[in-house]
Image (cartoon, rainbow, N blue to C red; front, side, top):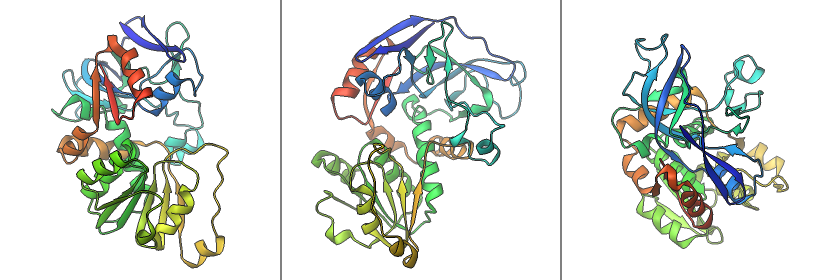
Length: 338
């Protein structure tokens, strides 16, 4: 079978890899498509110089073979099922896994291909082997929607840890792909309003078309201050934390979803946090509980119209170089490969 390997900045090749065989509790999945995330863009752009590497962790496809222990187990994925898949390696024994916080598993993530190449999901391939417990059936939906299982699970994780409740007033800083998923999920779960803030005129317009109650440039939010219960920061830029704090009403929560450059510091008033019962919460990745919810949302179709809007382009695996180039060079939501 073939698998895509990024070998350096602007360089990717398809390598032949032995077709994996499922263990007793594994399934073999023929990949239908795989989304290109920020990680793949950074690898290809050269800002995350880890080479050679087989990336791709937002993947979905159909089960083509099941291990003997799960082949007829009720609830387990069966041959022919369309599944979304969790390609994280959760060790189980570490302190974080035992606490139920496996998104922060202490064991280093990833694996290797047969030749020792680092694997970071390796979902940009024809076939992948996955533990059956880390696959989730989604019924008969577009495979592009199924491949969004991982980012949807990440957003479910974000909203779950935020303490969000139906009727809350929400703001999202950043109207890119993850900001738009926060908009979709909070609307589906009963937010009183969701406003999006972004520097891009185009992205603000598209967010408004997708149902944002209001949109604004970061420099034009004076009327938004102290008017939100939950503020999600999906774009880790200088000043974003301070802006999010200004948007919060009493007892509000600021959720740091997007990654920040490591040298960015935030200045917040400790007494203000104390007297107004404000919270600042970091969120990272996803956990099995979030996957179950995400798979249910995908299968229900509750987010289908929103997900359709977020597919920027589709490519075959043979054209993965063109797909990565587009994702790096142009503003996109999700580019799909497979």
